[in-house]
Image 1 (cartoon, rainbow, N blue to C red):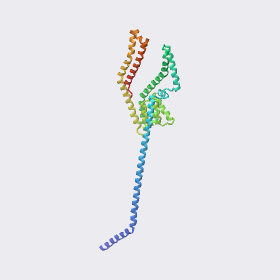
Image 2: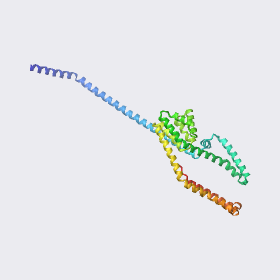
Image 3: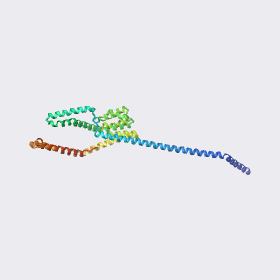
Image 4: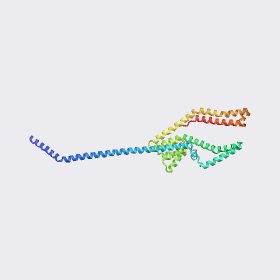
Length: 333
C-alpha cells in the first residue's frame, strides 16, 4: 500500500512540474503584464495627483490674485472717497447735504443771497468800500457754510440711527430672510437720513447693480467711515463668504463703541472748550464794559486811524488764537 501511495505522489509531483514547465512562459507573461498594468495605473494615478495639485495651486493663485485685485480696487475707491470727503465737488457736496439742488440753482441762490446781504449791510450804514467784501462773503462764504452745516448735521443724524439699522438687518438675516429683504425693510421703515441712503441702494439694485456694487456707492453720498465700513464688509463677504449676520453684528457693536468713545472724548474736552469760549469772549466783554463806563476812552479805537490799525492787528491775533485752540480741543475719531 505504501509503495502505491508513494508512486502516486511522485506521479503528481512530476505532472505538476511538467505543467509548470509547459505553462511557465504564459505565467511569466501574465506576471509581466500585471506588473506593466500596475506600473501604468500608478503612473496614471501619479499624473492625476500632480494634475490635481497643479489645478488646486492654480485655483488658489487665481483666487489670491482676484482677492488682491479686489483689495486694490477697494483701496483706490477709498482714496477717492477720502478725497471727496475732504474737498468734494459741488454736485456731490449738495448731495451729501441732502439737498436736491442743481449746481446752477445753487449759484443763482448764492448770488441772490450775496446781493441781499450787501443791500442790508449798506442800509445799516456799512461803508461802500466794504461792500465788495460783504458781497463775496454773502455769495460764496455764507451759502457754503450753510451747506457744510447741513452736511455735518445730516452725518450726525445718520450715525445716530445707523447701528439700529444694522441690528435690523442682522435680525432679518438670522431669521432666514435674504439680505435684499433687509435692505428693503430699512429703506421703507428707518428714520431719515438712513432711509434715504438705503433707498438709493435699493434703487441702484433695481437699475441692475449687485448688492456689493450698490452698497459701495453709499460712502459717496454719506461721507463717513461708518458707511465705508459697511460697504467693505458687504464686498468682502460677497467675495470670501462667511457669516454675514455675525460680521454685521460685530460692525454694529464697533460703531456703538466708537460713538461711546466719541461721547467720552467730548465730555473730557468740554472743560477745555468752555475755557476757550471764555477766553475768546473776554475781549468783547471787556470792550462792552469799558464802553459802558468810559465811552470816550474806547471810541478812539473806532474813530482814529491808529485805532483801526490796532483793531485789525487784534482781529488777526484773535483769529489765530481761536483757530489754534480749536485745533487743540477737537479730536477726530
